[in-house]
Amino acid sequence: MQKLAKLAGVGIACLTAGILCAADNTAERLKQSAAVLTEVMGAPDKGIPQDLLEKSQCVVIVPGLKKAAFIVGGKYGKGFVSCRRDSGGWSAPAAVKVEGGSVGFQIGGSETDAILLVMNKGGIDKLLSSKFTVGADASVAAGPVGRSSQAATDAKLNAEILTYSRSRGVFAGVSLDGATLRPDDDANAELYGSKVKNRDIVMGNTEVPAPATELIATLSKYSAHRG
Image (cartoon, rainbow, N blue to C red; front, side):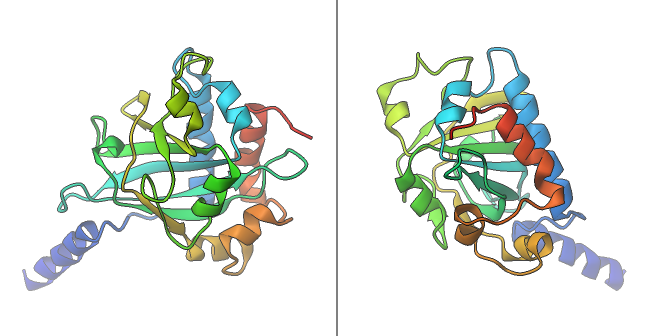
């Protein structure tokens, strides 16, 4: 009984800290990220407007963001960011951790996919800092949904970052204010063999590793090459 109580305590500690205790690895998250983008962009009249994806400077995808059971509003997830290269293609992905955030992350479920479009270079600089807080460190708006962004308000189109969330099949532009993003050094080390900085990955000439080719190909598929 004492042993069981100890194990239960460990499980609760994991949840209260917002840590994903289930087995997970970087390669699998890359596959999930590609799948999330494919499903979102493939939804007729309900996905991210393709013209916005084509204009975006960086894309952040966090598949399966978890809600901590013992902290009200506590959330935790891991994902990736890829940015435009000078050639117009997409960079190798850098790993990020996401913590906290408003109720916007939860639209009816305990596990949510999140996507952020960084629309200008100012947003890139903030995103690639050691710690970035959505809504505090950059202007953010809930992203418009549909085939075209023409119906979106000027406020949305002038935001540095547009945010989206999907839970239980429902996809919408929602506020992700308060969520913090920071580099996931361990995932980068797993993917690249060392704890390389996110800025060096996405702003340099880092080669796309094999596990990430599907994600980068998916980004390229749904956004025009800008050379």
